[in-house]
Length: 80
Image 1: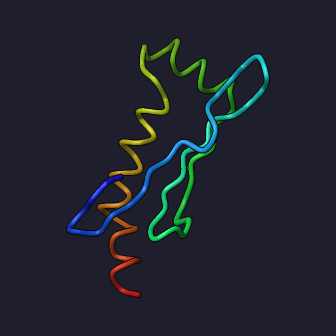
Image 2: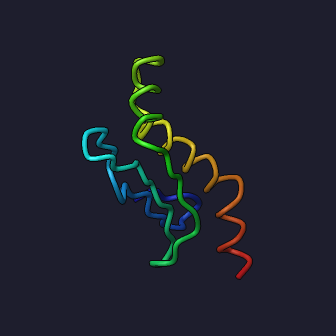
């Protein structure tokens, strides 16, 4: 749950990357159960990102989602 100016958004990992089973990483942003956006990254890219940056791509996507909520999605849900 991520709260911005009183509005509650959900940032959720729908699918975790698994290179062996060829499963991709998917992180979704929801508001009141409605999908606002999602990030999709192939399992190979997730592993390469971790190797090159010594960081988890999933954590970075959560940070990006929070930033987009503040800059774009908050205005969308408030205007409606």
